[in-house]
Amino acid sequence: MRQLPFVFLSLLASCMALSSAQAQQLAGTLDKVKASGSITVAYRESSIPFSYLDDKGQPTGFGWEICGRIVDEVKKATGRADLKVSTQAVTSQNRIPLLQNGTIDIECGSTTNNSERGKQVDFAINYFYTGTRFLVKAGAPIKGVDDLAGKKVVTTTGTTNMLVLRKLNNERKQPFELIGAKDHAESALLVQQGRADAFGMDDILLYGLRASAANPADFAVVGEPIQVEPYAIMLRKDDPAFKKLVDGTLTGLMKSGEFERLYKKWFQSPIPPKGINLNAPMSRELQDNLKALSDKPAL
Image 1: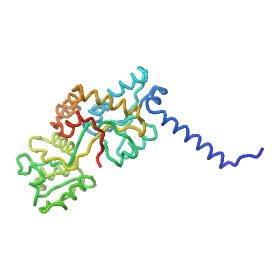
Image 2: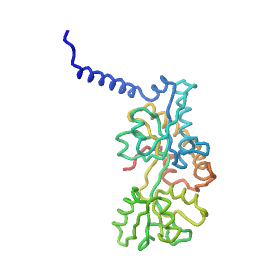
Image 3: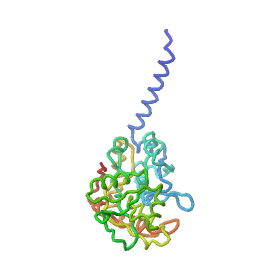
């Protein structure tokens, strides 16, 4: 019998391994979890208040608590009351690859649900909406975009907000002066020192910066959101059974009023570890989605 070439055998082994991995993915997250007795939940280390580390180094937050409710439903669906819950910190760079390769099973953070990411992963029902708004000194005559003509507006270099504001400025007949700062802290400092009139950034980050200031009452977050984007819990693509469970859990929370209670807990009450209150009201878009239950992405 003729011996098969080594290269052919290696290729065959690779194909078999790939087929096995694909079969496991096709089986779905619930089957994977039931067979292994374990689910891995991903969190962000500093995405306040969605998921972040508390003073004991443990994950906490709005998204993290909701994912806890999802895990409870997974236990029921799989019949695994003994389900082991493993945790995994992720970053903006590795969260999608780790979900795709099976290292994590669900990501609970501040990930924007957009069309480009939708080619790689799936998203649950949108559970937060953010948009570019402005941090100004309290009492400033700036209430929105129309009041920025001739003013100095700062944003953080390298962010999508810089692109949004640059595009907005190019479309205006009375432009503002757009400048960049190295980070969010420097941007806020320029407003505090009067070297900039407004700081344009995701509104939830502005609420966090205001709340952590020495005197939060010195600042206000103003304006209608520009280019509103949804945040959503991230799931593996083409796993309808798991998405149905996750969406069902969120639907139950939203219809029962429990979601609004959790929102008040994390966005409008003192939160650990420093007892800061973001004082972030629920956006109109999120209020609407408590009824629409949409997973529609940003463009």
